Length: 293
Image 1 (cartoon, helix red, strand yellow):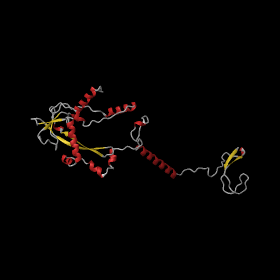
Image 2: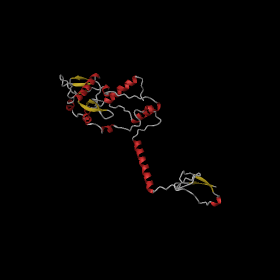
Image 3: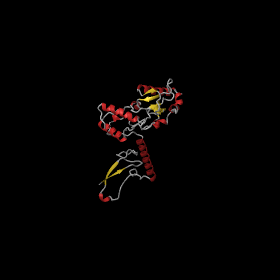
Image 4: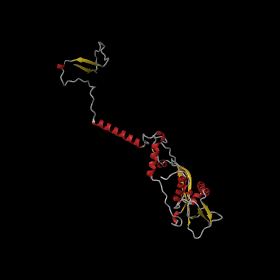
């Protein structure tokens, strides 16, 4: 039987016939020992070959380090954009490793100049004091003229004349910065009378489940999906009722201040405006070989 002894001793040794009296190496020596002279419980080990058992304090430190690493990985995974491996990376817009950012995230970093631009006028007088809002209101009236929305006529008697008002909003980009001042002239639809100023108001809208199904179908079949935004969509809807509205505040006709506008097309705020736009859009699509779902 052979035993292997690991030697690591300090002092003068004699190794390989060298009698220099210095330690020249550490190695192992195979020694032949008779089996009858070796007891079953006899073991020979060096001091360095024994591993010390970890103390409770060391175990607590290791557990705390592992818990800290796990929390860091969890926080990193929450702030990392996740995507399914079955989807092609070519369909991902932007850096897929960047964290999610919402509009509220950027609003916290706006400068004082940005805050001043975000302030929206609440009255027409406030808007008229700024050249940017005046141009926005004039753009709306020019668009009415291009779309042939109304005609200026003498005030009929007795007819319900619906009031109008200006609404002012700021258009923001993805970083929360103001990119355009948007004004809109809306009708005060609460003064409309059912059966006289409008009849039907129903217009179907898309459900969120339908949009999800569409996106899932597009992704699985590799279809390119385009989105189109119709500017001032309701101004394209033709109305069948006879509706009269007042002239826009602060933009009255100087020669005919008592005249009113007779609508040819729908106006934002009218109860029948959504239905008028849907009818116009659906008729156009059907004429171009589209089918109802």
